[in-house]
Image (cartoon, rainbow, N blue to C red; front, side, top):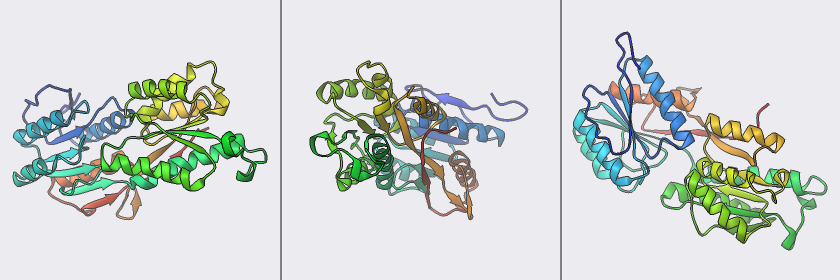
Length: 323
């Protein structure tokens, strides 16, 4: 891709060893087929290319073992910086420490591994709460007889909300807890928590198929992430017995394809109606979009600098239909 003296950028597919020299930055992520991760990595990659830095992306296909191997390879290649979005944030501490001992700077995104040079993340519990808030607002608008919470049906007729959680990491659990706790505190919905968790489009589709058979009166679904929500949306849109105008789906994580789906919900051509977007942090008093902020932090780390501190908190915002 790169020309005119710029280093080319490349994607490292699962299972393919990192064998190239001269790489400046490694970007280790769980799964680039996830819409949010695919969007973020591609946007950061573009900026690296424009700056003359060579960045390679390692897609772990959601395998902690594969991600460890990819990070080991980045260390062996002598990269300056590794940006890690851990598959399992509980098993990367030793390898991060080994990388740092060899002079590699580490940016950790999306979680707190306890060991890093810089960490960027969000308040996952509050993210879950805001997902639930979007669902609550939609339920009042859709099911209330007078436009207020007092006009909502009660008891067995109250809106039924199904939560599809993920609890395999502390961050996923915090977000899922935030969704459930907010709805329980609201107290005006009948809540079902799926015993089967989901993180991908395919698992979202299969889990929703089972849940709808067991709960045909479902009105609202909350999922841990947008990848799962895209699968739920695909399944529900294919079910003729579901009144699409009275079915709402809400989640976290944003990307352009996710926004396009949410936009389609305005005309009930989708049921995915809202998500939480990581807007980005404030750097030196200036709000900065997430991909731009990510690259600024990485670029500073390649120069051995941490001008924005060691912990950078990303702001989040609700994202519904646009236009």
